[in-house]
Length: 219
Image (cartoon, rainbow, N blue to C red; front, side):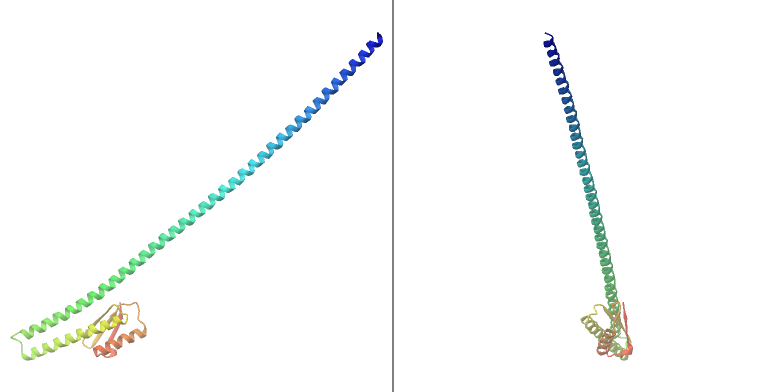
């Protein structure tokens, strides 16, 4: 009977020891799993945060670069537009100025020719009045006839010279005759020596004038 109780006590002790050992093993394993799981979670969170941070950084740089590129393109376009506008304005202004200058020059030559021809017409009319006057002597009428012929010859010579000058490239030219002195005004900023010689030759030949009596100027 005592032996049985002793054996029961031993079995009981062994059972308790096994239970304690199992509990300790379970606790240790659970702690390790928790630790491992925590480490994995932390690693995952760290990795995710790192990836998110990198993504934001790249996105931020991309946006900044895009914004910078867009701003640069906008600035370049604005500069180009301003330059084009400025160039267009300058071209328009220069064109307008050139046209106004050309129109003013044309007006000058047209007006000068009209005034000259009007003067000749008035002179011819005056001499014709003498011819038609009953009070004029024969001498006066002869002088009037000669003057009318002289005026008409001068007008014809001037017309021929101005047309010849035009064919040589001098679009605007007006000629004034005062006795033996002949003034030639050319619409140009300047004249070369060969152009001056060309003008002198035309005037001298057609108007029977000496070179020293031909005076050329520009307008």
